[in-house]
Image 1 (cartoon, rainbow, N blue to C red):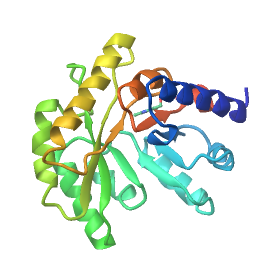
Image 2 (cartoon, protein in one colour):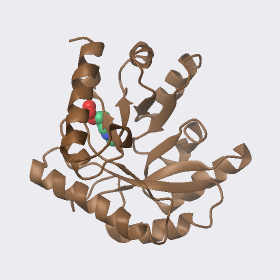
Image 3 (cartoon, protein in one colour):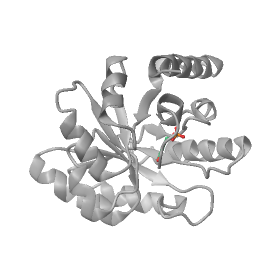
Length: 228
Ligand SMILES: *Cc1c(COP(=O)(O)O)cnc(C)c1O
């Protein structure tokens, strides 16, 4: 299958999932995850109408954004683990950073966004499977993250992101997605900007849409298997 056929098949899955749960298609943003795939794939996908692209590595993002400077309009999303000392490659370049999980990173993003005169939109990544993972804050840390961000003038928390373990069963994934939604709903009282839910990938996007995903991050269903 070529990219056009894969995109058509993916669109059918997204539309069916929206229809099946009474949601409108335009409530769900498709973020095409292009990590490890060449810039030419981004160009092709853009020509087919995609506008949101997700990258995991700062260096790859910088290279692609430079190579594709003529491709407009385009929104880059950073979805990988972000180290503080790499944040400068991402702030101002990405419409949305999905993977913020520490107070120090929030501070760093605010410091970098200030001289650019921008407000950087971010999502807070939560680890909900109870396992120790290297990225993602715990639900107990969420309130502190939101409180820390509140006085920062150049960073805005607009949603929550999670990624179930690859080994999660469909039922486990569903309960993780439901928990993310419940955490957002509860936190919204004090954080009215917290509207988005970034959850769902190639294999579980239907489950995520059913639980209220506003952003699904899809790689292999569009671009095939990754080499790394
Ligand atoms: C790679 C990646 C995706 C896309 O995964 P697929 O299974 O290829 O759709 C989504 N989210 C994150 C954080 C990723 O690293």
